[in-house]
Length: 333
Image (cartoon, rainbow, N blue to C red; front, side):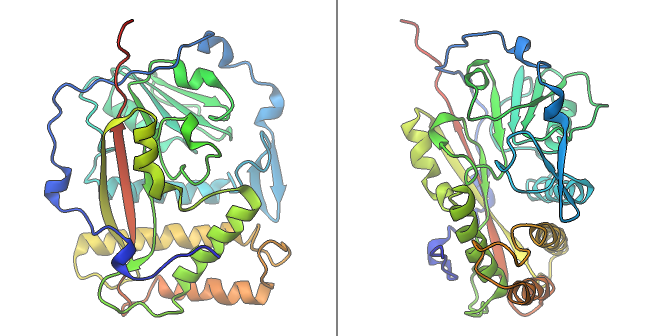
């Protein structure tokens, strides 16, 4: 299994307010990729098969690039993503991001947009911008602001995504999923389990769950849950500068005394509870040899996770990392 530790020595402390203060100044983002064909000719050229779905174990999944992303795309998943979007917005005090992109960006893209909540919010917040949401799954709403466009595609297989003059590329929980991080622009959020007061037991169910999930997803899909630890270094190697990171600790369990922290704990409990249900459809259904657990063993572990999400004694948390960086403009030759 992945080498996750439950003490705070491997986790950055939560950032204080001063860590998020910066001057907008003159901030411009460019690209060193040259566009080789017209993006607009690609949009809308998809075949009907892209919009089909696959149904397994009572859940619905995308059929385009089947197996590339294993999570469902049905109404239950929409509920989970909506709550997750609410949690991230709450963490940021109502902001959609921390990157200092100014008040009038012209073109933005959200990679792995899912149901498109962030794109719609960004389009409302920045009416000056064309906001594109990209995903493998055709699940986005039809009624959207006029400056929104959704595209069904794989970010790692089409160079047009990189060469279209985006002022801001937004990612959410995508670093572990991407096969080749060096091929895309990145803005990432990363969860890990931690505890600062010594109340985390050695057999803490949420910690064991994440270890098992990391191991299974690595073997089945090649996902690397530790990829985010390399993110600042990789961004630097890609030519990014002004690389910054802010860390927030989201409570796991109902132990906080502060109202806003308890609100985050409730939101996270809903998100993880819905995730468990989705995973019990596949691959944690007791029939996948890659998981290595019987259905009773899986049920016992997941019941332990659900109990931990309501625990008031263990002061666990998920450190969520927001990373942003600036790509230098090309110097004319």
